[in-house]
Amino acid sequence: MKRGVPLLICLAFLLMSVHAAFSDEVVQTLESRIIASFDNPDEQQWIVQGSKFIAEGYPLMTYAPAWPEAVYGRNSEGLDLRVLGAKAAFVKQGYNYLEFIPVAENQNGELEPAPIELPGRVKELDLWVWGSNYDYYLEVHLRDYTGRVHVLQLGGIKFVGWKNLRTPIPTYIPQAGGYVTEGGFIKTLELIKVVLWTKPAENVSGFNVYLDNIKILTDTFVTRFDGDDLANPQKVQEIWSNAEGR
Image 1 (cartoon, rainbow, N blue to C red):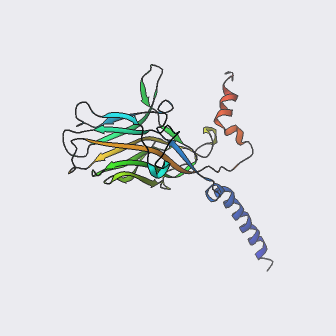
Image 2: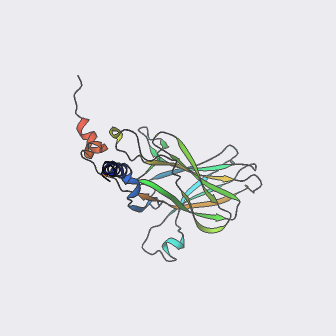
Image 3: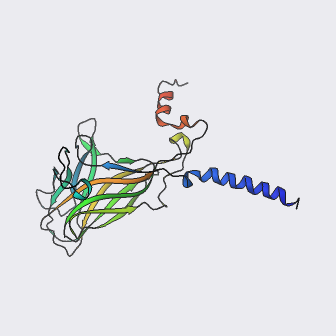
């Protein structure tokens, strides 16, 4: 019996170590966050780009005064709601696409891609899309902290009116790791763009599509550790902004 005591102690320490290492995976604080509502274009600008066979004069883009009733109800009195709309046509059938890209102005006043940072460990991403029964489909492009881009399928839009499309974030996409000096163990994903694809046999002579409320379900729990303030990007910037070199 006495020989088993040291073994039990070792197992206890091992379990404690495993718990400390993976506590962020066990303890969760799940939050729903809207990352793009399109209600205020000045806060987050977008552009729409077409692929090679886009018809002349297209695509057109607008922020339309509309909304999915399933989210806001039929009467939106007092709310200034907008959705991102695109009108397009292609000169030939095939795997054509439209890209919905978040952008911002650079120092020269030119628009350039500005990926949207997704806080926490993202579990799921969804959006609302208005379809008009064309056999097209949507996908979302996310970039992880290593620079790798992941393409996730949101689903087809062969339906009429508003519908919510969603995709889980696979566990193989890294959202933690690296060096603490890079800002901590949690590494945020970035939304690069949403892409609408046409299928080869479908009509592409002219169509409209609308997007609204890109949203994530994310785990914002972070395990504290002694000195974690020195891994906070803001704190790091304050400390080293006036540092002197030798």
